[in-house]
Amino acid sequence: MYRNPGEGLIANRLSKIEKDLLDRDSAQTNLDKIKKLYEFLFVTNESYPSLQMKLNFVEWKVFHETRVGTLGERISAVENLVVGKPSTEPLAFRLEQLVQVAVESGIVALHKVKVPKGTKILVRLEKQISSKETRAGSEAFFNVANDLFIDENVLVLSKGEPISGDVDVAKRGRSFGRSGHLVLTVNSIPSLDGTDLGVSLVGLAQELDKKKLGIAVAASGVGYLALGPVGLIGGIFVKGKDVQFPAGTEFLVSTAEDKHVFGIVARKEKM
Image (tube, rainbow, N blue to C red):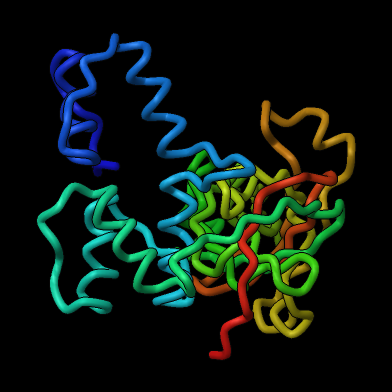
């Protein structure tokens, strides 16, 4: 919801969240507040989408992508385009008003589907990474490059969704012709309903990219994955003189297992 973690007593911080979201204090215990707020913000069930899922969908309807920022910033950005200015109402009420305006009939039509193992997803690097300048252990920032629909009309993943990856190994090119190399990993991708899709990073999106960058690429094997940290799904081992991936470089990832998620019935938007 916020850019930085809150400070002070947990009771006061929870009351602030309730006030910002709903303009009220529920007077429940801290544990009950945490449970209710978490479910309201992040848990989607057969009957009702989470606040996060509704905001993701409204952004997709308006901007054709998922945006980043605080909850207030993201809602305000939609309001500026749809109604001309931000509202002063509580955040949850503002989002409900946007759903009524931006979504046909004001209804978010949920549908549970299976994302099959081996589903290919195109992801895009947000910031440049190079074996010369990047350090092992650094975070790698990606985003989803294209929408993912299942059964033709069920949106389960929207363009722009931010993805966190890692630079596991970064070695500079050295003397005697020893080339630099990188090992990049993508841990998972959050679907529209917040479910993490485990993925394997399988290669660059296009053969032309390999030639242009002057590198060789090989997906990592099971032995390497078995030695990875908890949550590591897949990786790419890259060789070159000093390897550099510019911002915008596209990679393919593949889902590691079947996963059932809630999607939203929607027409594919024509760009």
